[in-house]
Image (cartoon, rainbow, N blue to C red; front, side):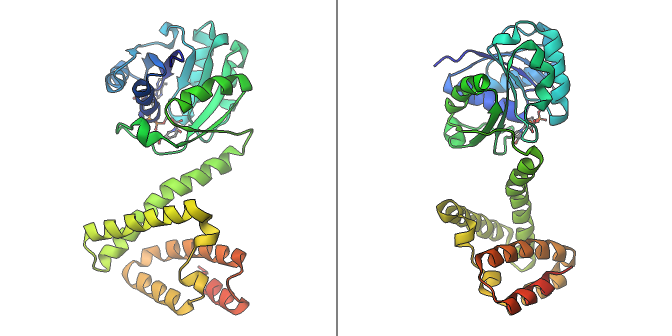
Length: 291
Ligand SMILES: NC(=O)c1ccc[n+]([C@@H]2O[C@H](COP(=O)([O-])OP(=O)(O)OC[C@H]3O[C@@H](n4cnc5c(N)ncnc54)[C@H](OP(=O)(O)O)[C@@H]3O)[C@@H](O)[C@H]2O)c1
């Protein structure tokens, strides 16, 4: 499959990961690549194993696709620079990768007649090489004109991404939600392992316990969702167990007591929505979780 050529403005962790996937899939030809510095663009090309590093957007040659993969706060300026420096964009698809933005940051390109899209691959993309097999099934939330989406979809399906088109979503709320699922889960896992080590578990055991638990939690979530599968002392109404948790944390990690309370309040909200608890137990928990 040859979908054409893609130029990349800002080829770091995210755009670089996608570029390597396109190379592995053999679906898109990596064209010109520009970063803040030429040395960084050259490193990106070496890591990708394809493309040509350049020093100016104005010197980038024609391409069917343009990916603005720079940091969120650079996208709009780079869209303006691209619109002002390159002609013949009317047959091209221009897209960015920022979950927090829709099409508004590409507005400077509207006058060029380019097909505009926002594409958010919903997973952590790092410098580590990701294979098409590992990327398979990754949610790729896409917003754009129908012309842009029609041409972007094959780029994503060629590397196994799960194509999820959306229309004018609340980006602030959307991005906050995916950030808490990914980043806060990792931060909570890190904190839980600290508590386990303080409780006496060796570090490797704490990592195994936490990671296995997260894996089985994932299986539950995929099978039936949080509301159907949640268990534990809050949904059981075991107030004395929760009192013991709070006492142990107050003793060993007093700085974390608010973390526990905030997270436990969310579990309580879920238990309440599921109708698990009688009024007296609910009120007892509410007073335990109050700051
Ligand atoms: N990483 C993720 O997990 C992930 C996941 C989904 C979406 N995203 C989105 O992907 C985008 C990039 O994030 P990232 O994590 O890949 O960031 P990153 O690793 O910091 O890469 C950003 C790249 O943009 C380049 N750049 C910055 N300003 C530039 C400019 N004025 N001209 C040309 N190139 C410029 C940087 O060049 P230098 O190397 O020279 O500094 C760097 O290579 C963001 O919109 C982010 O929201 C990221």
